[in-house]
Length: 288
Image (cartoon, rainbow, N blue to C red; front, side, top):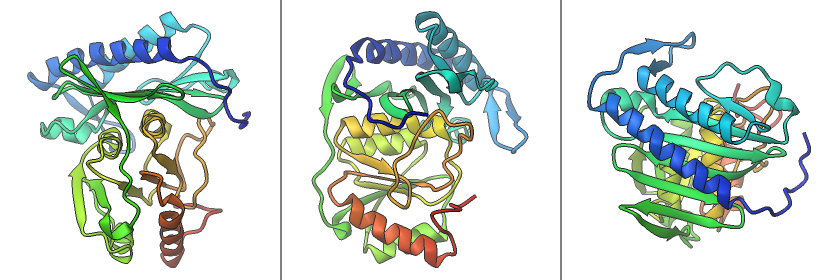
């Protein structure tokens, strides 16, 4: 994989296409959301529903038809690794936050990202229940589409950890995250499902920081959110401050992630990395 910075290219067509496809998939997901959707469980005991599978089929079919020379990596499709030979790869999570979908709390999203030579360059995050669409790409900035109106997105300028709003997970909580929060004297917190929606809150200045010191995220959880957040002026790295690269054979983010408004990202990472190591983790082995 070539990890040289991606040369500036016009991604307008890709961004418009991904936005349209995400909206189409949202219509499919909502038919199951207001009706019923059978729940099955994968080998790792994570749930999958008819909504996941139907949205996935629609998105992947549309992407392959429009961009037949690109690779595809999707959570709900068999990975044949052909994508490893491709410079451009579409990275898809047809339903991020399946537990929230099953709970009917609305905090789930459809995520379509594009990575070029391993770098996240374009991302769309669609929240089917609310109809909110987040979109962003290198060179194009980021915006929130609501009710037909496009609202530009730009992260906050909060530059002190004790003034930051932390966004955290609804479905799981870790002692290590609580330690990071208390060390940085963060007192304000928002709770949300879906990595995409958490990052969307940072892009909208409704939060400033998301910490995930765990190996639970995979490339389809991160590609669209990273592209969106960086287009809005934010930053995502692993818990030791390293860049996150895509279209790898092993799709798991073993070193977790830190997503922020970028203003004091290095300072936050210094604290996060130190606490990770206090808990027995290290940069070389990650969390595994």
